[in-house]
Image 1 (cartoon, helix red, strand yellow):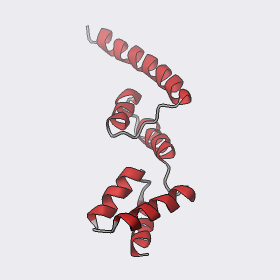
Image 2 (cartoon, rainbow, N blue to C red):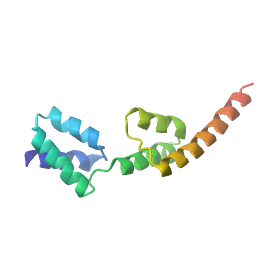
Image 3 (cartoon, rainbow, N blue to C red):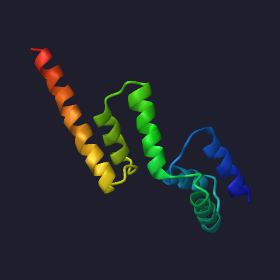
Length: 111
């Protein structure tokens, strides 16, 4: 149960993805069985959810910090934290279109 307790403390500070938590637990030398049990239980209890993490990350970076959406989404994709559900694909197409408009405005305003 040390693995479980440590994982609870780790995710209580900031939201984490399954991959982040798995890596951290293995770095602490917990066994595969303990890690798998902990992750399964956390997913069942919805303590970790990669889709929710992605939504919260985008909200934090784009809305609160004012960063452009497209690079934030690309960063999530690069880290493997962006799911490709139909809903997300439609949302991504709209974001890409708005990003292209913003990029073109900047490009032409520099002339």
